[in-house]
Length: 604
Ligand SMILES: Cc1cc2nc3c(=O)[nH]c(=O)nc-3n(C[C@H](O)[C@H](O)[C@H](O)COP(=O)(O)OP(=O)(O)OC[C@H]3O[C@@H](n4cnc5c(N)ncnc54)[C@H](O)[C@@H]3O)c2cc1C
Image (cartoon, rainbow, N blue to C red):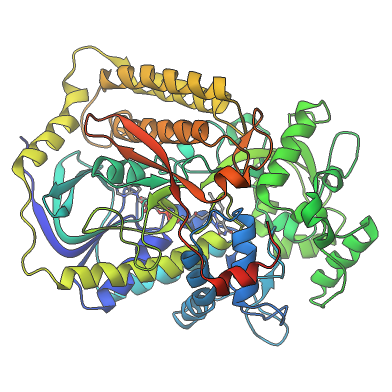
């Protein structure tokens, strides 16, 4: 076994996006010695890509907004399979977490009277997203990172964790390797927090970066934790469709939030016909009413006009675009048109500077002069590690999770802006709980050498094989399988076929060979990420097969209706059986108090 050093910490945080940084800050502030690991450079986490904003009921633009309305919107958007405790804590605490960011130095866009400006987003009743143009994530990560470093959190950059080390009483730390040298490293920790983000790389067309390979979900699953809601993969309605090299790149919902209009190749504003009947009254009746809403928004005025149909929830808009294209009314490159060019050019450039540059640079399109071409792209994972809604504790002692890797808050569909607030609220709560847990342990835990040796051998194996398949070929086939059989619309026969194909892909993966050395070897790095993607893909396919209804982001063509009698009270839970096989079963959605139920009114 290659020699390596073990680093002891009270709290080990794996992942340095918004959730990991916020957890590290809270744990450090509570007095814990904190190590923070990330597989790319600090500051390059996915959070930095967030564009539109962070949702919090500050009531700066719409004084009628409140945590109660935010709670209701989140539950309605999530089709009521959310964890209600998480949805309540999220709605009540997000305003304080945003104000705190401002105190720590974040500079948000402003209302004319100098308060944090808020913009509308799909599914939110009121303008609620605090933002910095369309570069909110950059400001957020800069602020959190400065604070974490100033507090003395110890950072391990370009370090990938490949295994959690367990003992009889739960998780004791982690094992991984430096990407720069390929050399192993271990961490002994009294409490471990997973904050590794999502799973987008299971699909070919995605807004996600290379880092989103389901590592945390898979590490937790292997350590005995439960995953829930894995069928709920969010396909964002608007990604770039052209040119091919940038297919999937996000076109922020802020474009629609600022008044962007969706049209098909016949010029029809098609979203009018896709609004769900039970929500119809929340949207404008006519083009004229929608235009009044946009005008009021751009002038920062309140209005009695209702929001445009483009601001329906993401699952609904994604299905609408998919259907328009499939039925032959798509744009030349297989998307639809999104147009904001009818607004003054200076306004568009000020509110959407990144979008302006993105289309100009990558597609040679000036969005102040003409429409963008857009189509659905895999964006966000609502499912993930099951956590306690208050503390972020997983079902394995000593292991915590926060951010996109954890599940529960968003139910069947996440509203835009609710992820950044999720990271802040539950990052802080989880960091505090992990520090508290660590404070109850005297010594850094002892790491089982047999597990370390096994992890070290698994690391070396692909490089030592004389023969074996190319990792990129298996990744390509995985993405093709997931796109073809487990995409926006699903049917049982396809899901069965996907489960079969995934088993074959895993066999091929077990014999994969990596060439070259250990230092900065992307092919070798991908071997471990691909193993994780295979695990989460199987969890998605099995959960999707089990849920015989359509709800939120999960659409079954063979079960097109929402079956409340059978499914509204259940989450899908995935776990590892003693023989190593994957099991999936329905488990009850956490109970809701009468007070919270009362807030939902007649929602169904
Ligand atoms: C283009 C884009 C725009 C978005 N815009 C918005 C928006 O406007 N509003 C909103 O609310 N949400 C938005 N989202 C979603 C939101 O950005 C993410 O859900 C959120 O940033 C996830 O944060 P996180 O802290 O959970 O993970 P990340 O920010 O992705 O951080 C994950 C961290 O884990 C590390 N990591 C992963 N695996 C390992 C491993 N094995 N070992 C060590 N480290 C590891 C990574 O290096 C990284 O540091 C957007 C997403 C995208 C892609």
